[in-house]
Length: 243
Length: 243
DNA sequence: TGTAAAACAGACAGGCCTGTTTGTTTAAAT
DNA sequence: ATTTAAACAAACAGGCCTGTCTGTTTTACA
Image (spheres, each protein chain N blue to C red):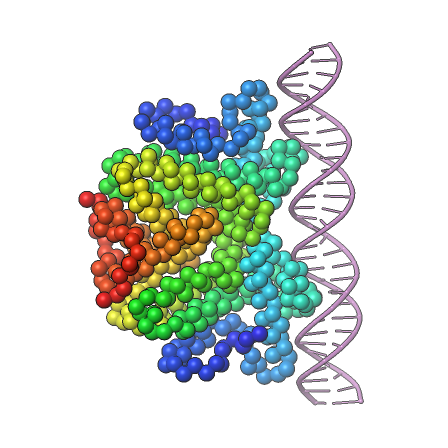
């Protein structure tokens, strides 16, 4: 089980930014720097429970994710789990917070591991984001996102977390992609477009069942981002009709 | 309860196309043209059950959509429902087929009701599609789409229907939007892009919680479709990097 | 007119899920 | 060393969901 705040010795100047970004999302009561033995042990099993929950959501869906199944997957007794999360609502709430944290961690880790050249010339960030849609973390996130639409209790936990996520991502985006410096608004809008396209694309990935169609849209998206970056395309109002 | 094959007297030349398109999606055993009294009665209550199921999926989500709730919503005894759909799997399967049909009907109805001028000059089809994402039919569809990712039984019913839907929509698209005549491939790719953007946008609609961001992406999408239509943008490979 | 079949309604049993309760082990404190 | 509290485990009760079974009404047919 990897510690939450990855202490790997990355000497990049950006590393601090990433860690600071991540620190803003670390759920409470999960840090390994607890004072006593019990705190550390508690955090460890809590993480085990939440990781198991992500697995359950990703592979069985929200409907079939029961407390029994989570405990079973975490290889822990249900009684022990109910000691840490007394009710299912509390557990779901913790899962949501953890899921957003993991998603942020995953994205930051992905962007950190590409070279500056790849990032700027090939827009490798698109590839990172695209791949992230097929991880268990994102699958779990999607299940919770959909559940939040109809379950008020889930929504009450989900909505503020989602808002905070996009807010932080927006604030830190310009640090992660410094080549857009001075064009923060343009980056924000390009980011919105990219997120919408890839999210919708991944959602229909199975239904379309055609790698060619998907890759065509992706390359087209890369072109558009390139043109937004170059200033050729703009988000201004008029909207030219057809010839 | 509107009949399945809408017999309203539309004299448009396109009306036949729409009806033919819809006829290809009408689920079996639901048509009002049954020979005897029992067949008609059966179809009527079946439709009532499926409409109730759509309501349940849209408002309570897949997880909380039980056979009890559906029967209750349909104002029918559970025993009666189990007479028509002996098992929950059979019911879900019927719901899926009906949901795709309703979605196709909704889209066809929407496109039918806009003028040719709106369709061509303002790309009003985008507006139709966008609005369709906030109907109960699409909410139910989304629940089933997500459920199909983790439930093999749901997927077995969902996947072929989804493939058939996109296939028919692709074939008939050139009839619905005849202004793209001769540019069928371009229409198909623009259609893919539009579907992905709007689907992803509607999915994040609540999470973003910012009408401005959403409308900006939508107007940008309209611009892009316009430029694809005009031939300015292309789906070709190279993909210009930044300056 | 009488019979078979379909539409419909209600009751029952088994299983699963949630939350509570009680008991046991282990670390921390005095 | 003893006491307290946290971590963990297991059993129990209540409720809900699914599927089956039986019974009742209505239509179709001979």
